Length: 498
Image 1 (cartoon, rainbow, N blue to C red):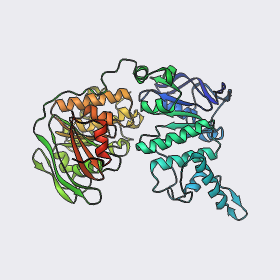
Image 2: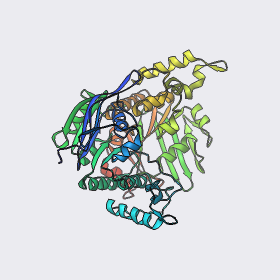
Image 3: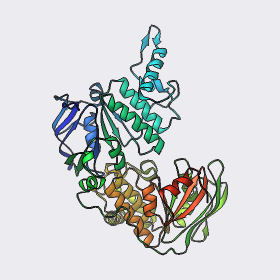
Image 4: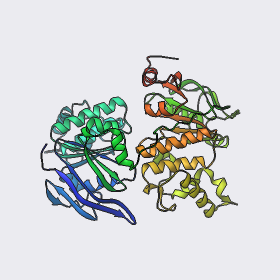
Protein backbone atom coordinates (compact mmCIF):
# COMPACT_ATOMS: atom_id res chain seq x y z
CA UNK A 1 0.00 0.00 0.00
CA UNK A 2 1.23 3.48 -0.91
CA UNK A 3 2.46 5.16 2.28
CA UNK A 4 1.16 8.59 1.26
CA UNK A 5 -2.61 9.02 1.67
CA UNK A 6 -4.28 10.56 -1.37
CA UNK A 7 -6.77 12.38 0.88
CA UNK A 8 -6.79 12.81 4.64
CA UNK A 9 -8.30 14.76 7.49
CA UNK A 10 -6.20 15.98 10.39
CA UNK A 11 -7.87 16.88 13.69
CA UNK A 12 -11.00 18.17 11.93
CA UNK A 13 -13.92 19.60 13.93
CA UNK A 14 -17.32 20.88 12.83
CA UNK A 15 -20.25 22.30 14.82
CA UNK A 16 -23.78 23.31 13.87
CA UNK A 17 -24.92 25.78 16.49
CA UNK A 18 -24.63 24.08 19.86
CA UNK A 19 -24.26 20.62 18.32
CA UNK A 20 -20.64 19.45 17.87
CA UNK A 21 -21.08 17.05 14.96
CA UNK A 22 -17.38 16.18 14.56
CA UNK A 23 -14.64 16.58 17.18
CA UNK A 24 -10.95 16.41 16.20
CA UNK A 25 -11.31 13.49 13.77
CA UNK A 26 -8.40 12.27 11.66
CA UNK A 27 -8.84 9.95 8.67
CA UNK A 28 -6.47 8.67 5.97
CA UNK A 29 -7.51 7.28 2.57
CA UNK A 30 -4.83 5.39 0.63
CA UNK A 31 -4.74 4.48 -3.08
CA UNK A 32 -5.83 0.90 -3.70
CA UNK A 33 -7.59 0.56 -0.33
CA UNK A 34 -11.25 0.34 0.67
CA UNK A 35 -11.75 2.07 4.02
CA UNK A 36 -14.98 1.68 6.03
CA UNK A 37 -16.48 4.49 8.11
CA UNK A 38 -18.57 3.04 10.94
CA UNK A 39 -20.72 4.51 13.67
CA UNK A 40 -24.27 4.83 14.91
CA UNK A 41 -26.68 7.37 13.44
CA UNK A 42 -25.55 10.77 14.66
CA UNK A 43 -21.94 9.65 15.09
CA UNK A 44 -20.70 12.17 12.50
CA UNK A 45 -20.31 9.99 9.40
CA UNK A 46 -22.43 12.18 7.11
CA UNK A 47 -20.61 15.31 8.27
CA UNK A 48 -17.25 13.70 7.47
CA UNK A 49 -18.51 12.78 3.99
CA UNK A 50 -19.70 16.35 3.41
CA UNK A 51 -16.38 17.80 4.56
CA UNK A 52 -14.42 15.49 2.25
CA UNK A 53 -16.73 16.34 -0.67
CA UNK A 54 -16.61 20.11 -0.14
CA UNK A 55 -20.20 20.58 1.03
CA UNK A 56 -19.08 21.69 4.52
CA UNK A 57 -15.91 23.52 5.51
CA UNK A 58 -14.32 22.39 8.80
CA UNK A 59 -14.27 24.83 11.73
CA UNK A 60 -10.77 23.65 12.62
CA UNK A 61 -8.23 21.09 11.46
CA UNK A 62 -6.93 20.47 7.95
CA UNK A 63 -7.78 18.62 4.76
CA UNK A 64 -4.69 17.20 3.05
CA UNK A 65 -4.43 16.20 -0.62
CA UNK A 66 -1.31 14.11 -1.38
CA UNK A 67 0.05 15.31 1.96
CA UNK A 68 -0.42 19.02 1.17
CA UNK A 69 -3.05 21.26 2.86
CA UNK A 70 -6.00 22.12 0.65
CA UNK A 71 -9.25 24.05 1.07
CA UNK A 72 -12.45 23.05 -0.70
CA UNK A 73 -14.63 26.10 -1.27
CA UNK A 74 -17.44 23.86 -2.51
CA UNK A 75 -18.23 20.52 -4.17
CA UNK A 76 -16.75 21.71 -7.49
CA UNK A 77 -13.34 22.17 -5.83
CA UNK A 78 -13.50 18.64 -4.41
CA UNK A 79 -14.47 17.22 -7.80
CA UNK A 80 -11.54 19.00 -9.47
CA UNK A 81 -9.30 17.44 -6.82
CA UNK A 82 -10.57 14.00 -7.83
CA UNK A 83 -13.15 13.37 -5.08
CA UNK A 84 -16.48 11.82 -6.11
CA UNK A 85 -19.47 10.73 -3.99
CA UNK A 86 -21.94 7.95 -4.83
CA UNK A 87 -25.08 8.41 -2.76
CA UNK A 88 -27.80 5.94 -1.81
CA UNK A 89 -30.21 7.73 -4.19
CA UNK A 90 -28.41 9.12 -7.28
CA UNK A 91 -29.59 12.38 -8.82
CA UNK A 92 -29.50 11.97 -12.59
CA UNK A 93 -31.35 14.02 -15.19
CA UNK A 94 -34.17 11.56 -16.02
CA UNK A 95 -34.91 12.81 -19.54
CA UNK A 96 -31.29 12.74 -20.70
CA UNK A 97 -29.46 9.67 -21.91
CA UNK A 98 -26.92 7.77 -19.85
CA UNK A 99 -23.99 9.25 -21.81
CA UNK A 100 -25.39 12.80 -21.54
CA UNK A 101 -25.60 12.39 -17.76
CA UNK A 102 -22.00 11.18 -17.60
CA UNK A 103 -20.59 14.10 -19.60
CA UNK A 104 -23.02 16.84 -18.55
CA UNK A 105 -21.22 20.18 -18.98
CA UNK A 106 -18.15 18.45 -20.46
CA UNK A 107 -19.48 17.05 -23.72
CA UNK A 108 -16.86 16.42 -26.42
CA UNK A 109 -17.18 19.03 -29.17
CA UNK A 110 -17.23 18.79 -32.94
CA UNK A 111 -17.26 21.59 -35.50
CA UNK A 112 -21.04 21.75 -35.58
CA UNK A 113 -21.74 21.13 -31.90
CA UNK A 114 -21.58 18.11 -29.59
CA UNK A 115 -19.67 15.10 -30.88
CA UNK A 116 -22.18 12.41 -29.95
CA UNK A 117 -20.16 9.63 -31.54
CA UNK A 118 -17.14 10.46 -29.37
CA UNK A 119 -19.36 10.78 -26.30
CA UNK A 120 -20.97 7.40 -26.99
CA UNK A 121 -17.59 5.76 -27.50
CA UNK A 122 -16.18 7.28 -24.31
CA UNK A 123 -19.22 6.14 -22.27
CA UNK A 124 -18.97 2.60 -23.67
CA UNK A 125 -15.26 2.53 -22.79
CA UNK A 126 -16.07 3.56 -19.20
CA UNK A 127 -18.63 0.76 -18.85
CA UNK A 128 -16.13 -1.72 -20.29
CA UNK A 129 -13.63 -0.60 -17.67
CA UNK A 130 -16.26 -1.15 -14.98
CA UNK A 131 -17.14 -4.56 -16.41
CA UNK A 132 -20.85 -3.76 -16.82
CA UNK A 133 -23.23 -3.60 -19.77
CA UNK A 134 -25.27 -0.39 -20.12
CA UNK A 135 -26.50 1.28 -23.30
CA UNK A 136 -25.03 4.82 -23.52
CA UNK A 137 -28.12 5.97 -25.44
CA UNK A 138 -30.63 4.67 -22.89
CA UNK A 139 -32.64 7.39 -21.07
CA UNK A 140 -31.86 7.64 -17.37
CA UNK A 141 -35.57 7.51 -16.58
CA UNK A 142 -36.51 3.94 -15.78
CA UNK A 143 -33.02 2.81 -14.74
CA UNK A 144 -32.86 0.84 -11.52
CA UNK A 145 -31.14 2.45 -8.52
CA UNK A 146 -28.25 0.03 -9.07
CA UNK A 147 -27.80 1.11 -12.70
CA UNK A 148 -28.10 4.78 -11.73
CA UNK A 149 -25.25 4.28 -9.26
CA UNK A 150 -23.12 2.72 -12.01
CA UNK A 151 -23.77 5.79 -14.18
CA UNK A 152 -22.59 7.98 -11.28
CA UNK A 153 -19.45 5.84 -10.92
CA UNK A 154 -18.80 6.14 -14.66
CA UNK A 155 -19.22 9.91 -14.33
CA UNK A 156 -16.65 9.92 -11.51
CA UNK A 157 -14.19 7.93 -13.63
CA UNK A 158 -14.69 10.33 -16.54
CA UNK A 159 -13.52 13.10 -14.20
CA UNK A 160 -10.40 11.09 -13.30
CA UNK A 161 -11.64 10.59 -9.72
CA UNK A 162 -8.97 9.33 -7.35
CA UNK A 163 -11.21 9.08 -4.27
CA UNK A 164 -14.63 7.45 -4.44
CA UNK A 165 -16.92 7.89 -1.44
CA UNK A 166 -19.81 5.40 -1.32
CA UNK A 167 -22.47 6.63 1.13
CA UNK A 168 -24.97 3.85 1.99
CA UNK A 169 -24.86 2.63 -1.62
CA UNK A 170 -26.49 -0.76 -0.99
CA UNK A 171 -29.53 0.26 1.09
CA UNK A 172 -31.98 -0.03 -1.83
CA UNK A 173 -30.27 -2.85 -3.76
CA UNK A 174 -31.03 -6.54 -4.09
CA UNK A 175 -28.41 -9.15 -3.22
CA UNK A 176 -27.47 -9.63 -6.88
CA UNK A 177 -27.14 -5.86 -7.40
CA UNK A 178 -24.94 -5.57 -4.30
CA UNK A 179 -22.66 -8.31 -5.65
CA UNK A 180 -22.33 -6.48 -8.96
CA UNK A 181 -21.60 -3.16 -7.22
CA UNK A 182 -18.93 -4.83 -5.05
CA UNK A 183 -17.35 -6.33 -8.15
CA UNK A 184 -17.06 -2.83 -9.62
CA UNK A 185 -15.72 -1.43 -6.33
CA UNK A 186 -13.06 -4.13 -6.07
CA UNK A 187 -12.00 -3.48 -9.67
CA UNK A 188 -11.64 0.24 -8.95
CA UNK A 189 -9.61 -0.53 -5.84
CA UNK A 190 -7.27 -2.73 -7.86
CA UNK A 191 -6.87 0.12 -10.37
CA UNK A 192 -5.56 2.34 -7.55
CA UNK A 193 -8.66 4.25 -6.52
CA UNK A 194 -9.12 5.06 -2.82
CA UNK A 195 -12.57 4.02 -1.57
CA UNK A 196 -14.43 5.28 1.50
CA UNK A 197 -17.37 2.97 2.25
CA UNK A 198 -20.17 4.09 4.59
CA UNK A 199 -22.76 1.47 5.51
CA UNK A 200 -24.80 0.14 8.43
CA UNK A 201 -24.35 -3.41 7.15
CA UNK A 202 -21.35 -4.79 8.99
CA UNK A 203 -21.07 -7.88 6.81
CA UNK A 204 -20.51 -5.62 3.78
CA UNK A 205 -17.68 -3.76 5.50
CA UNK A 206 -15.96 -7.05 6.30
CA UNK A 207 -16.38 -8.27 2.70
CA UNK A 208 -15.13 -5.15 0.90
CA UNK A 209 -12.82 -3.17 3.17
CA UNK A 210 -9.28 -3.50 4.56
CA UNK A 211 -9.50 -0.90 7.35
CA UNK A 212 -12.28 0.68 9.38
CA UNK A 213 -12.50 4.00 11.23
CA UNK A 214 -15.14 4.04 13.98
CA UNK A 215 -16.83 7.22 15.23
CA UNK A 216 -18.97 7.70 18.32
CA UNK A 217 -20.72 10.96 19.25
CA UNK A 218 -18.62 12.85 16.70
CA UNK A 219 -15.27 11.64 18.05
CA UNK A 220 -12.75 9.12 16.74
CA UNK A 221 -12.88 5.84 18.67
CA UNK A 222 -10.52 3.55 16.75
CA UNK A 223 -8.86 2.74 13.43
CA UNK A 224 -8.58 -1.02 12.89
CA UNK A 225 -7.45 -3.52 10.31
CA UNK A 226 -10.62 -5.39 9.34
CA UNK A 227 -8.73 -8.69 9.47
CA UNK A 228 -7.87 -8.07 13.12
CA UNK A 229 -11.37 -7.55 14.58
CA UNK A 230 -14.74 -9.30 14.67
CA UNK A 231 -18.20 -7.84 14.04
CA UNK A 232 -18.83 -7.95 17.80
CA UNK A 233 -15.66 -5.90 18.38
CA UNK A 234 -16.87 -3.32 15.89
CA UNK A 235 -20.32 -3.11 17.49
CA UNK A 236 -18.74 -2.50 20.91
CA UNK A 237 -16.64 0.33 19.45
CA UNK A 238 -19.71 1.86 17.79
CA UNK A 239 -22.12 1.81 20.74
CA UNK A 240 -19.62 2.11 23.61
CA UNK A 241 -21.18 -0.76 25.52
CA UNK A 242 -22.02 -4.43 25.32
CA UNK A 243 -25.07 -4.47 23.08
CA UNK A 244 -28.13 -6.17 24.46
CA UNK A 245 -29.54 -8.89 22.27
CA UNK A 246 -30.07 -7.57 18.76
CA UNK A 247 -33.30 -9.55 18.55
CA UNK A 248 -34.85 -9.29 22.05
CA UNK A 249 -37.93 -11.31 21.17
CA UNK A 250 -40.35 -11.87 24.04
CA UNK A 251 -42.28 -15.11 24.08
CA UNK A 252 -45.99 -14.31 23.99
CA UNK A 253 -49.22 -16.23 23.66
CA UNK A 254 -51.10 -15.22 20.54
CA UNK A 255 -54.62 -13.97 21.20
CA UNK A 256 -57.62 -13.25 18.99
CA UNK A 257 -57.24 -12.51 15.30
CA UNK A 258 -56.77 -8.75 14.94
CA UNK A 259 -56.08 -8.53 11.18
CA UNK A 260 -57.79 -10.86 8.72
CA UNK A 261 -56.93 -10.64 5.01
CA UNK A 262 -58.83 -12.86 2.60
CA UNK A 263 -58.10 -13.47 -1.12
CA UNK A 264 -56.80 -9.95 -1.61
CA UNK A 265 -56.01 -9.28 -5.27
CA UNK A 266 -54.76 -6.32 -7.24
CA UNK A 267 -54.48 -7.16 -10.90
CA UNK A 268 -50.88 -7.33 -12.12
CA UNK A 269 -49.45 -6.73 -8.64
CA UNK A 270 -50.52 -9.52 -6.25
CA UNK A 271 -53.07 -12.32 -6.36
CA UNK A 272 -55.20 -14.25 -3.85
CA UNK A 273 -53.32 -13.21 -0.70
CA UNK A 274 -54.83 -14.51 2.56
CA UNK A 275 -53.41 -14.43 6.10
CA UNK A 276 -54.21 -13.62 9.74
CA UNK A 277 -52.25 -11.68 12.36
CA UNK A 278 -53.20 -12.31 15.99
CA UNK A 279 -52.85 -10.05 18.97
CA UNK A 280 -49.48 -10.50 20.66
CA UNK A 281 -47.63 -11.94 17.67
CA UNK A 282 -45.16 -10.59 15.14
CA UNK A 283 -45.76 -11.93 11.64
CA UNK A 284 -43.04 -11.27 9.06
CA UNK A 285 -43.82 -10.81 5.38
CA UNK A 286 -40.67 -11.92 3.55
CA UNK A 287 -39.64 -12.24 -0.08
CA UNK A 288 -37.37 -10.73 -2.70
CA UNK A 289 -37.59 -7.11 -3.82
CA UNK A 290 -40.55 -6.86 -6.21
CA UNK A 291 -42.44 -9.80 -4.74
CA UNK A 292 -45.36 -7.53 -3.80
CA UNK A 293 -44.91 -7.26 -0.03
CA UNK A 294 -45.10 -3.45 0.27
CA UNK A 295 -47.95 -3.37 -2.25
CA UNK A 296 -49.99 -5.73 -0.05
CA UNK A 297 -49.35 -3.49 2.97
CA UNK A 298 -50.42 -0.38 1.04
CA UNK A 299 -53.63 -2.09 -0.06
CA UNK A 300 -54.43 -3.36 3.43
CA UNK A 301 -54.00 0.17 4.80
CA UNK A 302 -56.16 1.61 2.01
CA UNK A 303 -53.55 3.60 0.11
CA UNK A 304 -54.05 1.51 -3.03
CA UNK A 305 -57.37 0.08 -4.16
CA UNK A 306 -57.67 -3.69 -4.43
CA UNK A 307 -59.75 -5.45 -7.10
CA UNK A 308 -61.02 -8.39 -5.02
CA UNK A 309 -60.89 -9.76 -1.50
CA UNK A 310 -61.48 -8.33 1.96
CA UNK A 311 -59.67 -6.87 4.98
CA UNK A 312 -61.00 -7.01 8.55
CA UNK A 313 -59.59 -5.38 11.68
CA UNK A 314 -61.00 -6.78 14.95
CA UNK A 315 -63.92 -8.20 13.00
CA UNK A 316 -64.69 -4.88 11.32
CA UNK A 317 -64.61 -5.06 7.54
CA UNK A 318 -62.78 -2.15 5.93
CA UNK A 319 -63.92 -0.41 2.79
CA UNK A 320 -61.33 -0.36 0.02
CA UNK A 321 -58.98 2.57 -0.63
CA UNK A 322 -59.72 4.41 2.62
CA UNK A 323 -56.78 5.07 4.97
CA UNK A 324 -59.19 7.08 7.13
CA UNK A 325 -61.34 3.98 7.70
CA UNK A 326 -58.24 1.89 8.38
CA UNK A 327 -56.98 4.35 10.99
CA UNK A 328 -60.40 4.57 12.63
CA UNK A 329 -60.43 0.76 12.91
CA UNK A 330 -57.07 0.77 14.73
CA UNK A 331 -54.63 0.15 11.86
CA UNK A 332 -51.27 1.95 11.61
CA UNK A 333 -48.65 1.87 8.84
CA UNK A 334 -44.98 2.81 9.20
CA UNK A 335 -43.91 3.10 5.53
CA UNK A 336 -40.64 1.98 3.98
CA UNK A 337 -39.62 5.49 2.88
CA UNK A 338 -39.77 7.51 6.08
CA UNK A 339 -38.56 10.76 4.51
CA UNK A 340 -41.01 10.85 1.58
CA UNK A 341 -44.00 9.04 3.07
CA UNK A 342 -43.64 9.06 6.85
CA UNK A 343 -42.57 12.59 7.79
CA UNK A 344 -43.00 16.22 6.84
CA UNK A 345 -39.31 17.06 6.89
CA UNK A 346 -39.63 20.83 7.41
CA UNK A 347 -42.06 20.53 10.32
CA UNK A 348 -40.91 20.22 13.92
CA UNK A 349 -40.37 16.96 15.77
CA UNK A 350 -43.38 17.61 18.01
CA UNK A 351 -45.65 18.51 15.10
CA UNK A 352 -44.69 15.31 13.22
CA UNK A 353 -45.40 13.16 16.27
CA UNK A 354 -48.83 14.74 16.66
CA UNK A 355 -49.88 14.57 13.00
CA UNK A 356 -51.64 11.20 13.05
CA UNK A 357 -53.45 11.91 16.33
CA UNK A 358 -54.67 15.49 16.02
CA UNK A 359 -57.89 14.60 17.84
CA UNK A 360 -55.87 13.97 21.01
CA UNK A 361 -54.24 17.42 20.96
CA UNK A 362 -57.09 19.49 19.56
CA UNK A 363 -58.94 21.91 21.78
CA UNK A 364 -62.01 22.99 19.87
CA UNK A 365 -61.06 23.88 16.30
CA UNK A 366 -57.39 24.52 17.16
CA UNK A 367 -54.38 22.39 18.03
CA UNK A 368 -53.19 22.95 21.59
CA UNK A 369 -49.43 23.53 21.50
CA UNK A 370 -48.96 22.51 25.17
CA UNK A 371 -50.92 19.29 24.58
CA UNK A 372 -48.95 18.60 21.39
CA UNK A 373 -45.65 19.19 23.18
CA UNK A 374 -46.64 17.01 26.13
CA UNK A 375 -47.60 14.17 23.79
CA UNK A 376 -44.32 14.50 21.86
CA UNK A 377 -42.22 14.66 25.03
CA UNK A 378 -43.92 11.54 26.42
CA UNK A 379 -43.17 9.47 23.31
CA UNK A 380 -39.69 10.93 22.91
CA UNK A 381 -38.86 9.61 26.38
CA UNK A 382 -40.49 6.22 25.75
CA UNK A 383 -38.61 5.68 22.49
CA UNK A 384 -35.30 7.13 23.77
CA UNK A 385 -35.27 9.78 21.05
CA UNK A 386 -32.05 11.80 20.76
CA UNK A 387 -32.78 15.45 20.04
CA UNK A 388 -31.86 19.00 21.10
CA UNK A 389 -35.30 20.68 21.03
CA UNK A 390 -38.71 19.27 20.15
CA UNK A 391 -39.29 22.44 18.14
CA UNK A 392 -36.36 21.62 15.81
CA UNK A 393 -37.31 20.47 12.29
CA UNK A 394 -37.30 16.69 12.00
CA UNK A 395 -34.76 16.88 9.16
CA UNK A 396 -31.97 17.65 11.66
CA UNK A 397 -32.33 14.20 13.25
CA UNK A 398 -30.31 11.14 12.28
CA UNK A 399 -32.05 8.44 10.22
CA UNK A 400 -32.62 6.21 13.23
CA UNK A 401 -34.19 9.00 15.24
CA UNK A 402 -36.39 9.98 12.29
CA UNK A 403 -37.62 6.38 12.25
CA UNK A 404 -38.46 6.68 15.95
CA UNK A 405 -40.50 9.82 15.21
CA UNK A 406 -42.54 7.92 12.59
CA UNK A 407 -43.12 5.13 15.12
CA UNK A 408 -44.09 7.66 17.80
CA UNK A 409 -46.57 9.32 15.43
CA UNK A 410 -48.46 6.06 14.97
CA UNK A 411 -48.03 4.61 18.46
CA UNK A 412 -49.56 7.75 19.91
CA UNK A 413 -52.83 6.56 18.34
CA UNK A 414 -52.54 3.28 20.30
CA UNK A 415 -53.26 1.01 17.31
CA UNK A 416 -54.41 -2.58 17.60
CA UNK A 417 -52.55 -3.54 14.40
CA UNK A 418 -49.16 -2.09 13.44
CA UNK A 419 -47.71 -2.64 9.96
CA UNK A 420 -44.00 -1.78 9.75
CA UNK A 421 -42.32 -1.82 6.34
CA UNK A 422 -38.51 -2.24 6.55
CA UNK A 423 -38.44 -0.91 10.15
CA UNK A 424 -34.63 -0.83 10.46
CA UNK A 425 -33.49 0.04 6.93
CA UNK A 426 -30.65 2.56 6.99
CA UNK A 427 -30.29 2.73 10.78
CA UNK A 428 -27.37 1.66 12.91
CA UNK A 429 -27.01 -1.52 14.90
CA UNK A 430 -27.65 0.11 18.29
CA UNK A 431 -30.89 1.73 17.12
CA UNK A 432 -31.90 -1.52 15.42
CA UNK A 433 -31.78 -3.26 18.79
CA UNK A 434 -33.97 -0.51 20.28
CA UNK A 435 -36.54 -0.77 17.46
CA UNK A 436 -36.61 -4.56 17.87
CA UNK A 437 -37.09 -4.15 21.62
CA UNK A 438 -39.98 -1.78 20.98
CA UNK A 439 -41.68 -4.15 18.51
CA UNK A 440 -41.32 -7.01 20.97
CA UNK A 441 -42.79 -4.91 23.78
CA UNK A 442 -45.70 -3.86 21.59
CA UNK A 443 -46.48 -7.48 20.76
CA UNK A 444 -46.17 -8.31 24.44
CA UNK A 445 -48.80 -5.66 25.21
CA UNK A 446 -51.24 -7.24 22.76
CA UNK A 447 -50.61 -5.32 19.56
CA UNK A 448 -50.67 -7.38 16.35
CA UNK A 449 -47.51 -6.60 14.34
CA UNK A 450 -47.06 -7.25 10.61
CA UNK A 451 -43.38 -6.68 9.77
CA UNK A 452 -42.07 -6.46 6.21
CA UNK A 453 -38.32 -6.96 6.04
CA UNK A 454 -35.67 -7.81 3.46
CA UNK A 455 -33.15 -8.73 6.18
CA UNK A 456 -33.32 -12.46 6.86
CA UNK A 457 -31.67 -12.27 10.31
CA UNK A 458 -34.35 -9.75 11.33
CA UNK A 459 -37.13 -11.97 9.97
CA UNK A 460 -35.81 -15.07 11.72
CA UNK A 461 -34.94 -13.24 14.94
CA UNK A 462 -38.21 -11.36 15.47
CA UNK A 463 -41.07 -13.26 13.83
CA UNK A 464 -43.44 -15.76 15.42
CA UNK A 465 -44.51 -16.75 11.91
CA UNK A 466 -43.03 -16.03 8.48
CA UNK A 467 -45.17 -15.50 5.37
CA UNK A 468 -43.18 -15.69 2.12
CA UNK A 469 -44.21 -14.03 -1.15
CA UNK A 470 -42.98 -14.84 -4.64
CA UNK A 471 -44.07 -12.93 -7.74
CA UNK A 472 -47.21 -11.51 -6.15
CA UNK A 473 -48.39 -14.70 -4.47
CA UNK A 474 -48.17 -15.98 -0.92
CA UNK A 475 -46.27 -19.25 -1.36
CA UNK A 476 -45.29 -20.35 2.16
CA UNK A 477 -46.17 -19.96 5.84
CA UNK A 478 -43.48 -21.06 8.31
CA UNK A 479 -43.63 -21.28 12.10
CA UNK A 480 -40.73 -19.76 14.03
CA UNK A 481 -39.26 -23.19 14.72
CA UNK A 482 -39.32 -24.18 11.05
CA UNK A 483 -38.08 -20.92 9.54
CA UNK A 484 -34.45 -20.97 8.41
CA UNK A 485 -32.53 -18.91 5.88
CA UNK A 486 -32.65 -21.87 3.51
CA UNK A 487 -36.40 -22.48 3.83
CA UNK A 488 -37.31 -18.80 3.48
CA UNK A 489 -35.03 -18.25 0.47
CA UNK A 490 -36.24 -21.45 -1.19
CA UNK A 491 -39.83 -20.17 -1.01
CA UNK A 492 -38.85 -16.62 -2.00
CA UNK A 493 -37.13 -17.83 -5.16
CA UNK A 494 -40.00 -20.13 -6.13
CA UNK A 495 -38.21 -23.38 -5.35
CA UNK A 496 -40.84 -24.54 -2.86
CA UNK A 497 -44.46 -23.80 -2.18
CA UNK A 498 -46.77 -24.21 0.77
